[in-house]
Image (cartoon, rainbow, N blue to C red; front, top):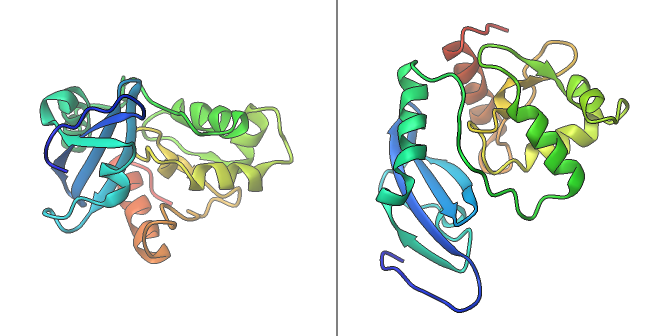
Length: 182
């Protein structure tokens, strides 16, 4: 997996990592843009869903310098929005609309699942928004941690990949870093 592999068909995926207050953050990038972000508490372990987001993964930190720099600046408190090309291939039109809307929620602010549902033209679709947010493979850059329940409680975060408790703690810490206290 550490060597570059070219294929006639399929997608080449460059991957690299950076260290954050939450452990190692692995990033995967396709030719279209950033494709996957995965937190790992083991810095030596490349999560398979980060590295294998395509058919030909290869370690290429130089190809992810811009994304790594922006993420490092976010955690340093000097960046409040991400300006990166994203690869949203594989999402349904509804999921794409939800994630693009979530991407616009400003640093230090929250929106409810209902707010996002209304913004994408599905005012009764808060649960569907929750489902779309749950499959966000670019958490942090598409800031789903800023999406909370209508009653003001935190909801879940990244529960598909880790325990719900750990995800909720991470979501709360990200919000605290941005000055939001629930």
